[in-house]
Length: 387
Image 1 (cartoon, rainbow, N blue to C red):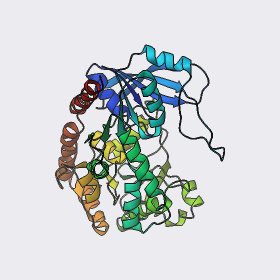
Image 2: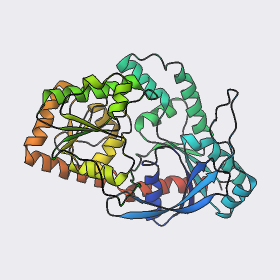
Image 3: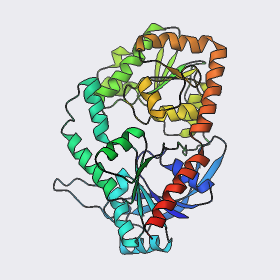
Image 4: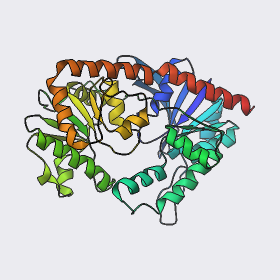
């Protein structure tokens, strides 16, 4: 089958599906919108859904026609020129799969090429807003929730089929009358490879956390994760902590630099997947103190690199099939997390057990063969139904 997959932004979860289908022998083209006015560039991108097993995927950087809003701000890509459309038509795709940020572009191409469209919904903003309202009493985004509900329902209804990344999204869509929907957990893939030697000095042993703080992000929510990790670090001052995604400058800009204990080191944003992989592999354990159900890169990466991870029940329930003490450590009470960290660091048997459990869970839950099989069933159904 020849498939166009449209996506943008965070690609780790989006390239996984492309890689899984490519492994099964499908002709997959991963399409990214581009603001370039030049002809679309077709090349190859190499990814891994299992470390050491590279997969080559066709990639197209697609020049798009953007429209301007009344305020002069760019909105989502709306379409492509006739020459670019002719190029896509020449590929003879049988089906198009799109993520939220590219749906309008995908819908335009789908209608002009008379090709069915599958919508892969990774996240619905309204569900996150409701979780923030319940957990953090954050009311600033509440007016966005109705628009998010209407928008995502409209995308699902106007697509030939919808894939939900979690059961909560499927239940949400079904509640509002969407029937052609199924849940399929996204498959993680790493793709930013580098031959450069890392220039970051790391402690010999450390606990790892990924936290991105910045004024342009959800500061209140991210700050809670930051405060939790700092509180854990203070409770075990003899243990080193490394935080990726945030720099001291970020903390200074937010007025939080004084909150950092001496045993915590911030290394800023890491865009090289090889370097990030090295940081994961050297970590004694990974912390994921997120209190609401969501896709988490750090969970996927921790299991990808077979690392012990401490997480909340909300995250464990979202992923499903995780057993406390076998695949990871699950604890809702953050006051007990320092003891969990000490156990992992001091108990070689437990650490090795969790590493083996993480490997077994990743092999089963994130199998590219199973992911591709589920996608094949959906795509075949859509193609047969629309012809």
